Length: 251
Image 1 (cartoon, one colour):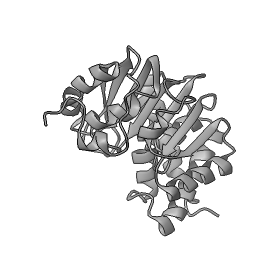
Image 2 (tube, helix red, strand yellow; image 1 turned 120 degrees about the vertical axis):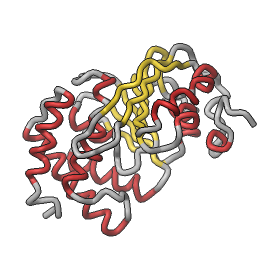
Image 3 (cartoon, one colour; image 1 turned 90 degrees about the horizontal axis):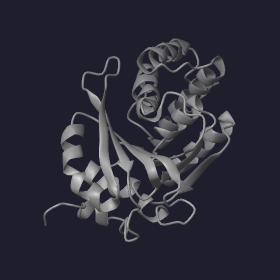
Image 4 (spheres, helix red, strand yellow; image 1 turned 120 degrees about the horizontal axis):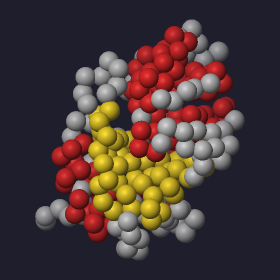
């Protein structure tokens, strides 16, 4: 039995907070899926060090609820479309969004094999349909024909600073689509620093959405970027270059 069993009160709290903060109603089946997900995360983390967040209450808020806050920018119940999560880690934010919005087609991109294997296990155990887990670098996958400018939403959490992250995300978003970066207190400053790079990539800042999670002191932000024009084919540059030389930076 998953180690998370016996902590159903945290999942009940997730249901309450999702409804109050996000106006999202989670069914019993969806809540059970989150409980299984949490159990797998705790079990695998004891062997594979997937995350520093291991307490059941923290998993519910800092992983699951935090991931679901992307719906504030996507619309609370998107019932169609494609979403890609770049640098997904243990599946955040992509898999919680998929659980809450089962009609979405979701792709996870992750470069660490053990995290890819964990995400695949979650997908299998929960019986999630229309989920693809790719072992690869975002800079490379963004050039694949089947993924380039093919997504309504490109999302990421805790991957890189925004001037770097925009080069990972924008090649995936279709023209008219959105890139959503989950950021902490530095979100406002990072958004300003990323504006020059966004112009090169065909995007612009659409809005910054403040997020207040329960029992989390800092204000978090969704940096929401709109794709206005096609991204030049030269981008993303080869792996490692965006982090070394962010677009718009002064050498």
